[in-house]
Length: 238
Image 1 (cartoon, rainbow, N blue to C red):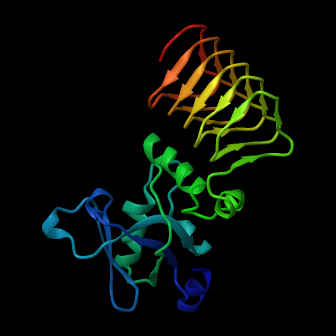
Image 2: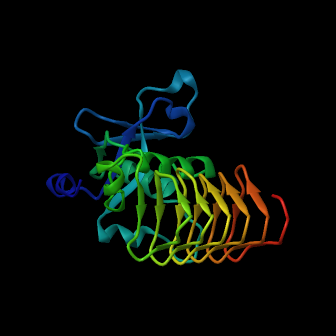
């Protein structure tokens, strides 16, 4: 992408990616030379002329930053990019046909974790999943006590502690310094750093921010998203 940007001496280059249904995102039209000609947000079926959408990755020349107003709400997609087209400046598309996903919803955010663990996408941290699909990736700095159960694919990061009798189910992510206490259960749960899941608590198909505390025998299930420092008291159900 950088090589294309430099070769074309572009003012801006953006990544486009093909999708099955561009009407859910907004399509971007290009000419045969790869120059961007039009943005069309959420087109009707009869307006769809291509399958490429804005993937949200940009290279901009520093000189163009001067056009961004200070202390004013402003959209780069709705204001800056159209201005490049109006000025007939070199505005180039880089077509990426590899793995791409919009993680703007909790469901999609959880899906990308599953995809990484299934080897559909190769990231630096994902290498163990790609070489050994279905395996559990456990940091050497994590502590898994005897009698704890860890079912892959899953990810347990540095400093995490999984106590005896706890169960880490498939597609779970245990962030740094998390504590999973005795007989707690995780199933497709995504935990950011420094969470504590108390004894016999359950977190299933949910996302926890940092420094959350799930009380004893509490249950957090089916699409719950908790912000940083959330507390779920003992025996509660969400």
